[in-house]
Length: 264
Ligand SMILES: [Zn+2]
Ligand SMILES: [Zn+2]
Image (tube, rainbow, N blue to C red; front, side, top):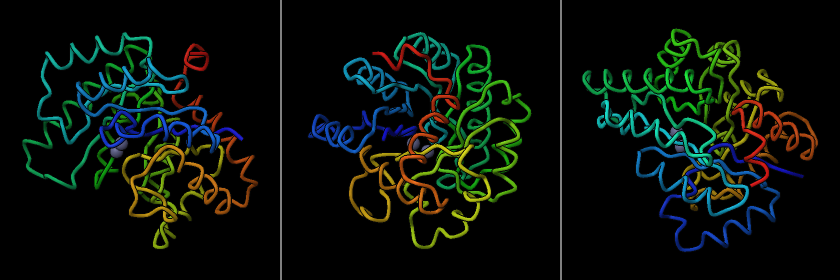
């Protein structure tokens, strides 16, 4: 069985104490690939350093919407320089987050940073990992306007309706399923996931956040993607091995992972 944790923050300092141990646990659980995503320039640099040091760990670079206040021409130029690093395989995480701060000037700068990063991804040939919190409709509208069907990627930790998922699928995006899908109250999300179907799903942890129900309250880590995959297989009525293999292949395709990343 092989698993691909398509969304984690494995460079996070919360792993500094036992990163080697958690990597062993991930491998024992069948996790062969881990994408670690930056949410600032500094975190993107940390993600790249980690990817360089560990086989099976790949980096994404991007500015998270919650950190969009920093966005300017200099940040944009530096992000493009980071994307030239061979250990960077995805642009992310990017998107819109209306949960923490709804100030109009902040929303405007989030939109600007999101659109600029989508254009960069389209121009440079990267897939994107998309964060949407209380913002699915705006995210989907911007994706359509920015021709995201020519970009591709994952709607990570998706929590919207089937109609919203459908709009993502129509743009060629995959749906990221994480620990929240295992929560007892997530029945509506599981219904959406069943309608979407395994062909369009990938699994993720968002570690160190959002541990699945069986580990709820703990620091999440890449090994726990096996628990989310096990629960997802049960939701879909599939054998765990089949679910693991399909979501692994979906992840490679959705995120346009280059062959070189599988060898190093
Ligand atoms: Zn996110
Ligand atoms: Zn994240």
